[in-house]
Length: 223
Image 1 (cartoon, rainbow, N blue to C red):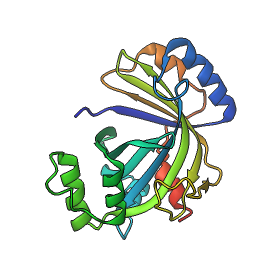
Image 2: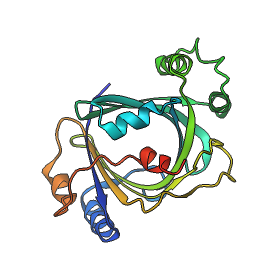
Image 3: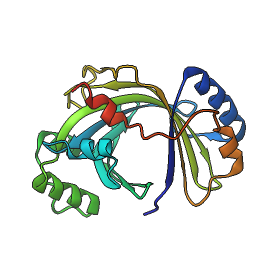
């Protein structure tokens, strides 16, 4: 597992247009999606007392959250993801699931998980049993992604953040999501051992400070 550096910035639409033009000149679009643009739907899990949400808001140094995720409305590729944070560095683990397995998770049927060959599934099962992790809300948004192999860099522009309120019907095309208030566009820059100057210059925006924006936290304001 590789811990990675991560910057987040809240940006305006004019920032978005500038960044898209700069990044298109120096980096490649993610080969997934249409021209690097795709729709993301996630279902986040939390405890009854909102442990993951409170740790994010409080800025706890070591924290984690779990989510189910798929792309462009296509449930043929689904992942369980664990996003962790330690000393300002981030790490992500994931495992692929079938739609049936994901539906069992959402409904609270954990029978296939304890004996799985995937350590992440076994960990998630134990935390569902011992901590009471359960589905909380759907988070939808659009992402435009760029990659730059030196430094293992990935830059994303996220916008159109929508909340499912308290909906957990992950695969229903009729699941209603609404705009998460005045949520900003988000620039995320992730890299491994070093951030090349070419990318550092491309994402530089005067007056924009690194922030700790959480799409999950923004959407939980509504349910």
